[in-house]
Length: 108
Image: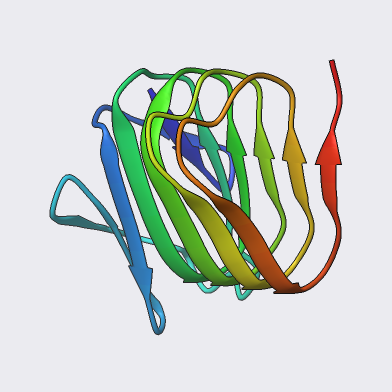
């Protein structure tokens, strides 16, 4: 399950591009909200955003955001990257973790 601004969606791929949010290729109605918060309660998700906070409570493949904080609770098979934001990892990451402007934390 994927939660976008408090609304539940079924899927495992999230993309945010400009003012559009897509879950498994279908556009999500943001109802005029400017701030985007993504919470993933699923395994094998792939997340790519231009902005917004991303929280993953399951295992995931890759997480990439241009601007926003990332928090993972499960195993990350690939990479976690953000250009501007903090990354908090509570489990293991098989790939790389990077941020250009922010902190990287491991919390167990």
